[in-house]
Length: 107
Image (cartoon, rainbow, N blue to C red; front, side, top):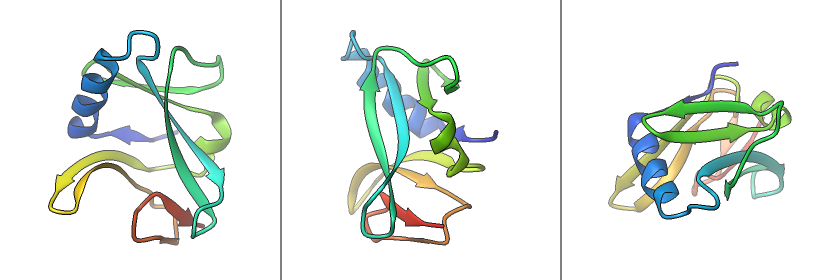
C-alpha cells in the first residue's frame, strides 16, 4: 500500500507531536459524511493497532487503519501554508471529486 507523507507534512506533524507527550502519533482516517460523501479525520493518538499502516518520516509517525487505507491508495499527505491558511491536505488519486475545503471527497 503506497501512501506517502511529504517533507512539509512530516515537519509539521513532528512539531505538533512534540507538544503532545501522551499522543505523539497522527491518526488519519476516512469516515462517511462531509459534503462529498467521505471525509478525512485527523487525531493525535498514543499508539497504534497491529494492523495499522505505519508511515514514519523525519521523526513524524502517521497511522492509518486498513479500511481507511483502501480509500487512500496512492495518496499523498501534505501540509500547505498559503494565503488561504495552513492545513493538512490529502492529494488522493482515488477521489473523483472533493469539496472546496479539501477534507471531504467522493469516489
